[in-house]
Amino acid sequence: ITLHVDQLHGINSHHIAEAAFKSVARALREAVEVDPRKSQDIPSTKGAL
Image 1: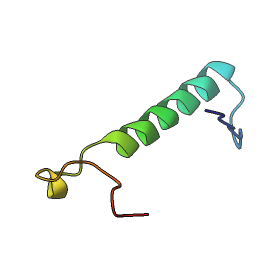
Image 2 (image 1 turned 180 degrees about the vertical axis):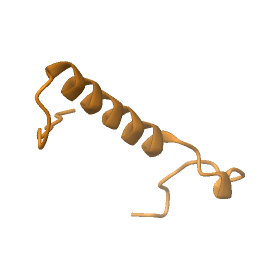
Image 3 (image 1 turned 60 degrees about the vertical axis):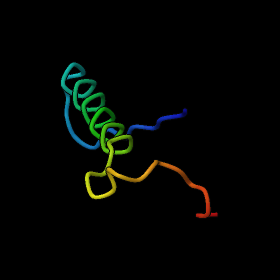
C-alpha cells in the first residue's frame, strides 16, 4: 500500500505525525468494519463484477 499525506497546516512534527496516523486508522477502520445493515450476509463480491 502506498500512502501520500499532504501537510496543509501545522508546525509541530509530533502533532502532524499523530494526526496522519489517526486519520489513516479511522479510514482503515471504516473500510473493514462490518455493516450492521448487512450483518446476515456473507461478505463477498460474487455477482458484483
